[in-house]
Image 1 (cartoon, helix red, strand yellow):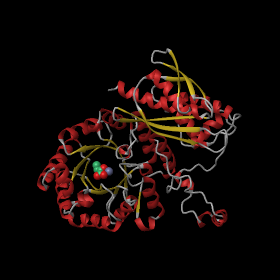
Image 2 (cartoon, rainbow, N blue to C red):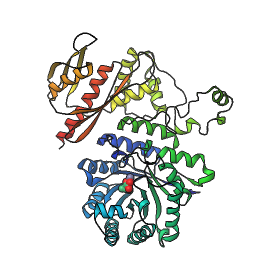
Image 3 (spheres, rainbow, N blue to C red):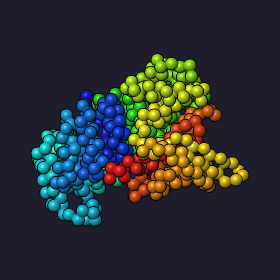
Length: 505
Ligand code: KIV
Ligand code: ZN
């Protein structure tokens, strides 16, 4: 069987999803999980797009050992040089050059002729090739480009040294039969195609990204570009878990294998969801909370008698924890450590001690601590951004009479206690206004969501917010058994990100 290369672009195209920006430590944490997951290539970012991206690509390049680490670059000398600077420390560096190819893009966006594009593609691939053996080229909007011209571009860039040629369905316009024919046409008509891997990169605007990618594999593509949970620009990209599990489940049709450790899929999905703040829809294939729950009596009866009656994948294969063992206040360090390991966390001793203290505090407030509670607690305790202001305490009075009023106390940058109070239209508004009076950074709240982590009156409430300031969006998360405290924590988390970004310029 051929090996299918899984190229993960969660940290590049995935991060382009509106409101999904990640900070550097979050990107590193996802990169580590992608390595555990066994992806072949991590597209770590687009170094020329911002100093933050440049830095995170560099750190990922230093940290990641097994996968190829790839940096994206426009067909521009500065972009290519900066991609190399960022990725050069990687054990296996790749530069990915892209350039528009369709007449629509040539005419309306980049205002270049086909000949100019051909020349630029050749020269920029040759420039990248001086830095590294491993060069990928993408003719952007390929699915809306005349196939003969795509053949010409690919032959040219392979001649110039491209070792992977990627065919993007940039706007998610293709349908499977047509996209598969494009791939087959490329394999038959590009004379030097045997010197490169053919890759595909499909967007999900018509909900066909996974189907298009898989049809391309059936017709000869040997690299698929995808993202965890299918996140990405607009409607997103092909979802890694769907592509990988279809290939695994229907090996009879695809006759390729991947190097993915499928038991890490669920963990990767949860992590990306927590860090980007994009929830996974309950009916999402493979990783949704309902993906393996059987509701109808007939189905339940079948699954009890023999799971394969209604289950095509054993949930354990994708790493869904087998037991929902519940911990409580009598659970000790050993049980907690075991549960963390089963959930896929490997913490340093110091982080473990912090997490254990937080667990004990939670277990005092909440009778049963479930896996979801633990995930929430880890997110809260170990993924805190460096704090400029720390929330010390919050008090609110509210109800259906009188004006909701909040008082808050923060610990400021110099360790000083800063207190203030404010009325508001509701308790959360009052808390946010009181915090604003102390921090004094103008911003606009653009999103506020609250959900209960588990059922039960003592459940943890998880708050996710997004604030906008100076054209940038900052995400904040907070969790607590008191939803007002969770809301205050989420706001402080977003404000601290904003202040840290401002400080870093
Ligand atoms: O969708 C697209 O065309 C891209 C390219 C940069 C590969 O993301
Ligand atoms: Zn894309």
